[in-house]
Length: 115
Image 1 (cartoon, helix red, strand yellow):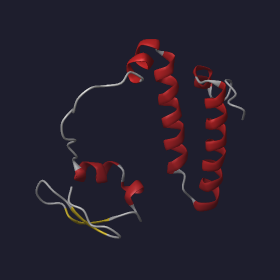
Image 2 (tube, rainbow, N blue to C red):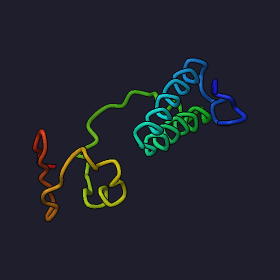
Image 3 (cartoon, rainbow, N blue to C red):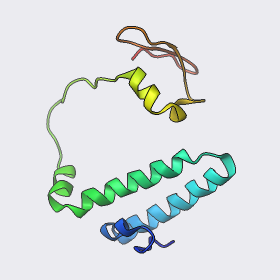
């Protein structure tokens, strides 16, 4: 692929090193998708690199994204049922949801945590 702009036009916003990294990662993900029937990773890889190119295409956004921040932005709120409903393919085989009622969820697996 070599990050060809005629195949993936947004790569023109990536550096030469980033194009190489994208190409290596994309080939590995395609191989896994073919061998392991894990095609969701192909979509994630493309979406991630496309988002990177989109940010780099806008100098103001890129500058803002690479500027250090100060302070604590507070707790991260997680709507676990909505996350599971929106992305069940990412959670299958990774974790098991035991309880989703109330503001917290309890997981079982190699490590249990309350979120």
